Length: 151
Image 1: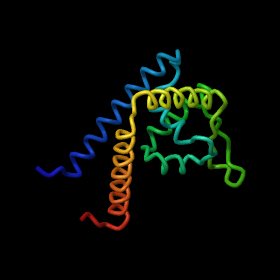
Image 2: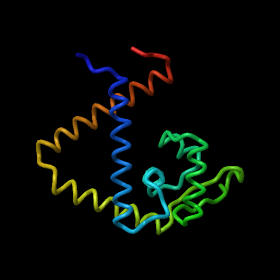
Image 3: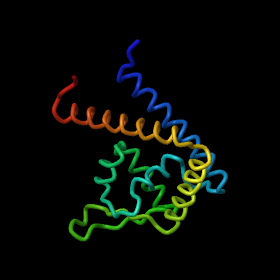
C-alpha cells in the first residue's frame, strides 16, 4: 500500500499535537502556567530576531486571528515586547523579553538533555533523514501553492 501525502499530513498533525502535549508537561514541570504550548511555539518562531507580525505569520504559518490573540496574551504576560515600527507606525515589531528567552532556554535545555540520553547514532541518522524528507515535502507543497503544480 502506497503512503499518500494526505496520510503524511495527518501524521504530521497528530505528531504536532503530541509535541504540544509534551510542551504542556514541561511547562507544568517548570511551574509556568501563564502561557500555552502553542504560545511557546510562537516564542521559538520569533527567537532572537525582531520581527513584524507579518514576518511571524509567514515564518510560522499561523492563522491571523489566532496569532493576534496569542500575541496579545504573550504581550500581556510579559513574554513579548511589541512596539510600533520606526518606518511604519501602523506595523508592529515583536521581540522576546528576557522572561521569554529564559523560558525558551529552559525548554531547549530539557530537549537537548533528553535527546542526548535517548538518541543513539542510528536514531540520529534516522531523525536527519526524516527531517530532510519533511523539509522536501514542505518545499513541494509550497511550490504547488505558489505555482499551481500538484504533481
